[in-house]
Length: 209
Image 1 (cartoon, one colour):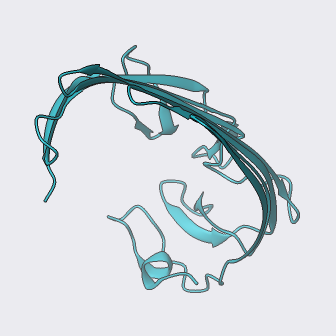
Image 2 (cartoon, rainbow, N blue to C red):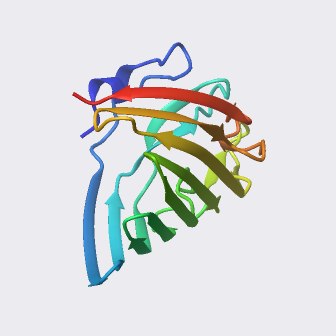
């Protein structure tokens, strides 16, 4: 059910309210299989989701400087997820891949935005001793639609992002991290209006009560 915010918020004067927004209804089916083999574990999911009266932000046709939440039709989502992990006392590896195909049953010209067709994530963490470990991950995203200000749809550029960090845990309660996000300084975005940050260096200290 759309909230009052979904219907009436102007979001800092960038949206047009839509008091006639209907409820979105989703029906989800999933079949999964999981297997553990010593240090290895794996999981495979197949799923189908039917979404009726799907709610989506679209460029407002009467003034393209604004957006509006609208019911954009009925969609079928077909997907597959695969996950593999490996863990020992000093090494942890993992990865997962998701494939999603989206079909608009109402109007093929309207695309489901921000739903990547292919998405992959993998990571590794190696314990080098003395409470220090090294961590790295990779994110890959391809095939997500976004809507331009003229109302047409384009596929968001494919991107691959790498992050690395060193982790020091002097006690069970304290964790310190130093590392780099977006190691290769990749120019990427999830939405054409909001490019993501380039290479970032960071230092964090965390305390767990």
